[in-house]
Image (tube, rainbow, N blue to C red; front, side, top):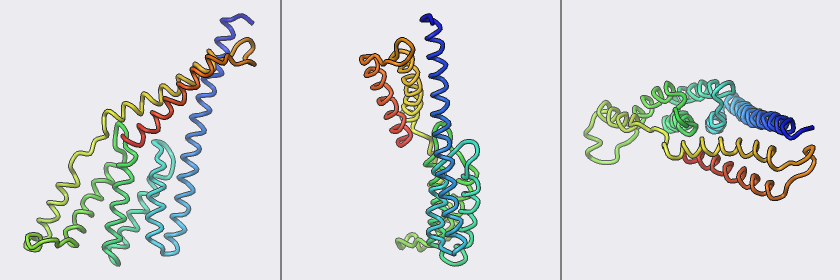
Length: 220
């Protein structure tokens, strides 16, 4: 086998490995989301609304652009919040806030679930207006006035941080490239031996960019 053919095979194997890694990440997120959703549904059926809120929110934090349980969890969390409005306003407010914050927590270059966020903002503003009387000035205001003030605060732009979003993308692309380069440059011959120097070099690159990817997701 000549060197050119070996490189082609190495690149092909590298691409396959990357695809397998992406598939594994997708499956991890999907299965974790499903597990949390099942816990939430059990808690809801038992009337344990506080626990249901917690697990529906966790379901949504395992966000997938396609598939997953984010939309069903958002629908059910909204349902819980509406039920609680008739029973316990404070917990209803917690539910609406959980729905809103879960979508903001999963934003990157865009914010998913904007319709849910807008609907939650209206509910949160109203509940806050009805529950808060911190000062004499607040007590003199009408519910509608306080609702409008709260809604103004809630609807302020909350765009993803551009710097950390860029770090996220660079980290992911660097990680994928590092894996490919490790496979391409660190193996010799028939791919059964590792060149120590190249292995350390590209292994370090993989670790570095993977860390940047995780930090970017946390900060963006």
